[in-house]
Image (tube, rainbow, N blue to C red; front, top):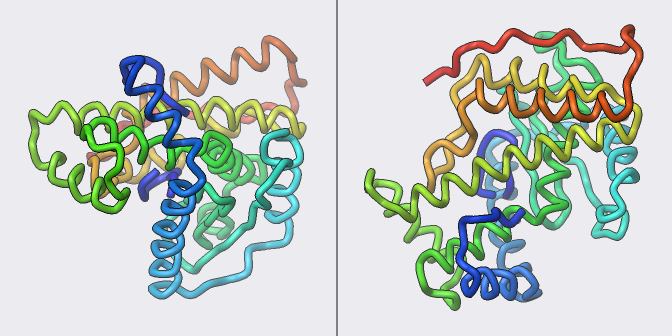
Length: 266
């Protein structure tokens, strides 16, 4: 599953040579490979829901999700995107390529007090991962890194997990770079979706600061830290917001105050 915080996940320019890129593209277009990944994702989702209590997300979140999906020509073509939630005090969100956005109940809790624009930003980020088929792109790229395009995704995950323990592993470093690039691309696309539905794109920056400024960056069990360093990520997101505002200015009263970046917890 692609992740806002964690769990395994846009083809990343520059990470692949031309020939492997062609093979990776073939893998991404292979329906049997997409089905293979879906099975693995559904196993993860089932295990997650067995550990936690499934809860009903507020109806307004379903409406938010529907409006964001409607703003994406790609997502409107299907498959249908569903919202699932479970009880947990930790802020977290996930996405699966086949059309599943998963939130923890902390997202709409009074304690966390996230605004509706910030909640929309979280879901827009997850939808961006679904648009890009990021989990499938990551899985297919790992097959090419390993030089075994016919390997099962599950076996490739195990192989890449071993690479993680080697601090000098080029494969692990490249995989981590891809994950970071996917996160930045999802932030930028989320900002575009927020603007498209009339929400304040600045919410993408503020929610990143609130969430990642108080907790460690997510750990992917295979690749280590899945998210870019917070200060860099906030700067990149803010640049994307400024570009959107410059193209279509918004009224001052609808501004969300810019957060002061806090050090990333280690």
